[in-house]
Amino acid sequence: MSPKILIVDDSSTTLLMEEMLLKKYTNIEVVLARDGKEAVATALSEEPDLILMDVIMPKMDGFAACREMRRHEKLQAVPIILVTSRGEPDNVEKGFESGCNDYLTKPVDSNELIQMVNGYLAIEKER
Image (cartoon, rainbow, N blue to C red; front, side, top):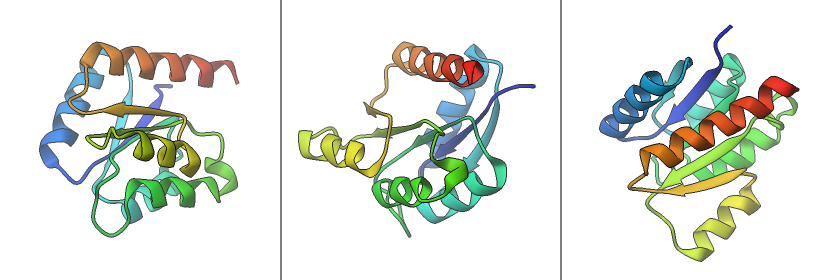
């Protein structure tokens, strides 16, 4: 069974680029969401193995979505990587305080993203 990754971003271009990159270099199933509220609902229904999430989004930002996901028992152990242009130290700190496992700044280095995703998926397989 292929691992499932939820990609969350309000930019259709970013969603498409990340999906294409992941499908090119990994054997995964991709699920998409376009805002924080949709991300929480999709994560609860799809139960992904990993979540890649933007911070600046409508309806609910990535920090709030991350905190909300961590309130649900079945999402508490799912790795969340925040992928955002907000790389200021206070935002990075806020991300980790919100419950993310890792933080990448845009523009994303594709090799770094693939390496990080593969690392988290390997950890998930061991559980």
